[in-house]
Length: 288
Image 1 (cartoon, helix red, strand yellow):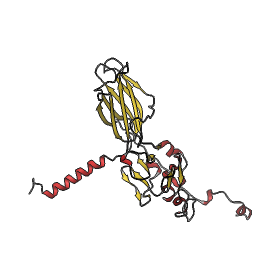
Image 2 (spheres, one colour):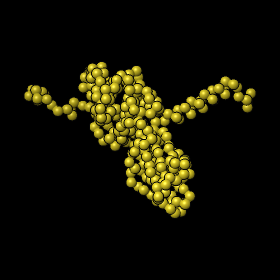
Image 3 (cartoon, rainbow, N blue to C red):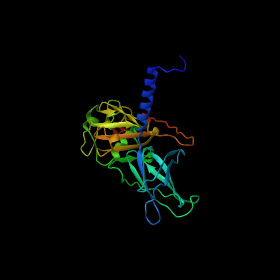
Image 4 (cartoon, helix red, strand yellow):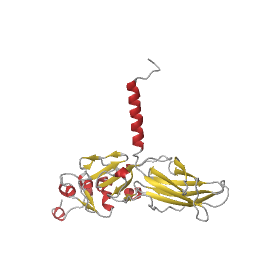
């Protein structure tokens, strides 16, 4: 009958709501810890702190500082943010260029000036990433590196080898014999060479790969290698990570681009042809 809902429909709707809420908790991101002080260095409670993504203009979150003058924003999507702080009896403070990366924590210290909230003090210098709220230790490979460093086969996962302590595992060299471009597979393509890595002696067969909020493992290997143009950043987290990333010996998180307020795109052509290859000595000697 129209207007009535069966028990089965109610159960399905509850499951969908629960699943949607569960996924929202696992969006890959970093933490932003904000501390608010007055000119004397005393902590300021009940200050309104707003976090805005400067690329999209979206207000991601807003909170009030506690008794200790602090507020913590968790699982903030990677990007560049503006932190705005307002408190009664003080000028509005704005901190620009606050970076957020997956698995990292950024600390922002804001000192308020006495005055009216209609007056604004803006700091445009980049905020240093100081991790004072998490024991997680990792390396972030920024979009600048992804876009500008040469990549064999346009495989962004090969940038894992920029991380200190990373070494090749036996699987990468001998598993399918394609690391050096044999068996008709060009160097840098495939999954073996970016799957079996070891950091500081960790097990090469226990790495966990994440693509945004989704597990990206196929047995011991990475399941899907994303296109280099769709990756915002890579985060390589050894075993000192937060519980949200606690899956394998090492967790490698690839975050795709979320877009901005401005339309943009790119175009590329990937060509491998023998006419671009240098001739070897003996072929040249034979007139080939």
